[in-house]
Image (cartoon, rainbow, N blue to C red):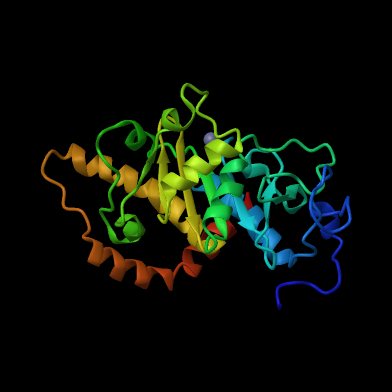
Length: 268
Ligand SMILES: [Zn+2]
């Protein structure tokens, strides 16, 4: 495949060094899925910084990318504030969220969100988990988050709510084990976004640009919806048919904001 390098770049040493022979973990670390196009690693590092720059991620939250060429692996930063992530921080995981080559690096506690969604959603190649501030109120209110303009048309299919009490009783609200990750993936079902009560949300996409775009415009829609409600009149939301038409149109243009966001975020 074109995106897999035939010769290992030096960057590869930062993300994957086989610690056992290829095959199952069998008590050791899982084996690496092999080299990855460095530009994809750069995009993943950029996605972290874009989402921080756009106010979706702060000191917390994470974004992952399914391993190109091996659907049983994914890539994500070591535990680090997203705005600080560079290519050398990217680690490789299997879908049980075991690290391929931990080398003492601290990992995100909630990495199970990513592994379990990748297991449940074969067409998803990028997952964003954030505490996106304008979205949080919709996870604790009876007012549902709904698409009110064309840029957030992807929300017209509905936004499910993950109630962690139903899955784990009284918790610290963090998705800190595979069972909670599976329950979240089940709530998300086939949707692009799920709210997490009292916590944040999860956004998925078929590629990194679309997932980042959706995460940004979920936050923007939440902000605009509060403003529309505060005007005091009735609010007209998008109909599902409008959502499909608008989402189709916008999917072909997201390279434009991506380049802008990336330039801005990497300039910092
Ligand atoms: Zn979280």
